[in-house]
Amino acid sequence: MPIVVLLEFPGVSEAQYRQACADIAGHPEGLHRRADWPVRGLLSHTAAPTEQGWLVVDVWASQEAFEEFAELLAPILRKDGFPPAVARSYRTFNLVMS
Image (cartoon, rainbow, N blue to C red):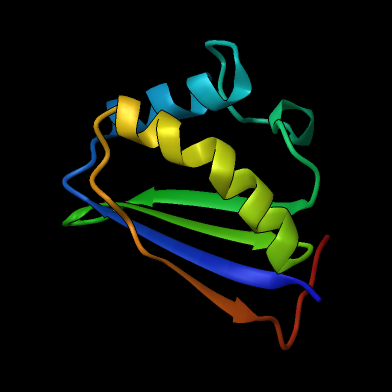
């Protein structure tokens, strides 16, 4: 079952977000295409600056797919100076994709 994952990163800048995306993708262009993601299961990714830092909203095919990605993500975020984040996940009720 798909899940929605919310990640809030207080104090994180756009430069830090861009660097993390480049590190995750393994190339400087970052994560702009589904093929750039190192694991399967991502259905959508949205990121936006907030007054407090940075917000990421992902939809993953399953909790397991997100957990696989989170294992890869955690050390990259630490390296790039992100504060610890708590991921909140919710089972989807309705998912519309174009």
